[in-house]
Image (cartoon, rainbow, N blue to C red):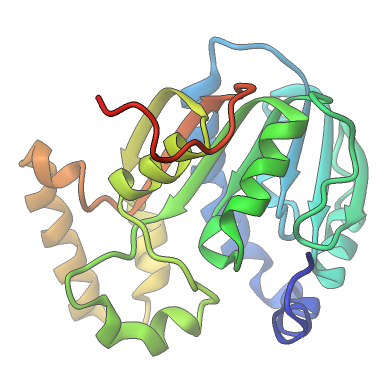
Length: 247
């Protein structure tokens, strides 16, 4: 199984120097979420699946997160930028087909998959490969869900988001694929990120800040509608099992 031709073409030249500063800013907070969940575990080797242009790995390298880091990416432009950064501890960068991970079973202590699953046509296929090659996993997804999300389809598709999640729906997906959930966290975009997103619309920036303030006051809402959801899991030897024993 491979990424569809039209998606492969769309991502081939996705990355260039014009967005480097923005991606580096956003990646810092994604990397902070990774460290916050995994700070009590030592990882001798780490693979990032869908590494983009390497900003998350660059931050993790600066923070000495792991002695050996590896990257997989479907985009030629992304892989080229990763190589150009000369990231310390980064041992290898490879282009892959989007689904088949070219490493043996249980090869990595940790696989990171941050802001990738929302772009993936066949989520379960990739999840099974990630589980196969790793002992632990950290996923992060944006929470785009609203009750009228279909009315914003053009908006999200323009970002390449073809899957929409809530924290609960993403946990269900992982549980159904027999990942063990260790820890998770909901988060909002930092103020500096929001200022960049709404740099041309001060009114939308103020509205976003008000929404965040309200949601943070209500734990129930915070668990449903954060900006991002990050989760640490571990592998099991079990696979998808339906019509089994009811709880």
